[in-house]
Image 1 (cartoon, rainbow, N blue to C red):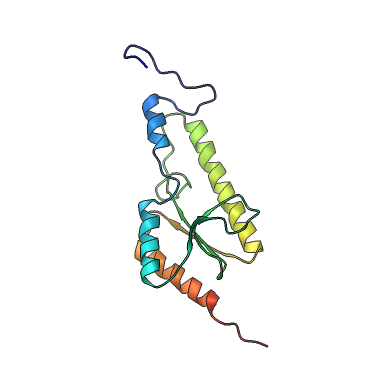
Image 2: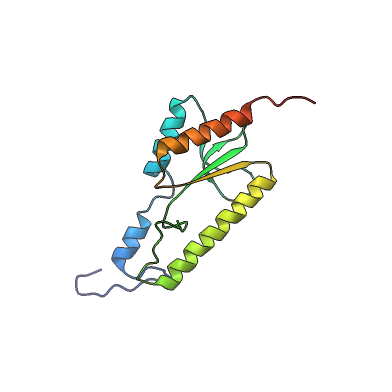
Length: 153
């Protein structure tokens, strides 16, 4: 694009400007700092897991951390993308599109939780702003409890 040209979004694009488009494309879908920190703490506790994996083969959604034998799926949700009640602020540019997008993400999160729970999985969700050590401790406790042998009746 030459210096004098005005940027035009591609047909059907959500981008309100070239800068916004670059910004949004740079946002990571996985391996965010909170995810990496929690994984590091879990690994230090001796826990092993799958990263960005599908808990159920027929469910086209991935959890951030998956403990298959313990049937535990962990999600570390971004405050903006998942509508954190403490930190979500509706954008000033194109608010209709983005608010609808976030509402759709929230609905998908609830559907994912329901489907995994129905399949016998434990779903743990944390916000990106939560303390990583606290999150890791909660995950470790849940996984260890689910791995414990069940009493036979």
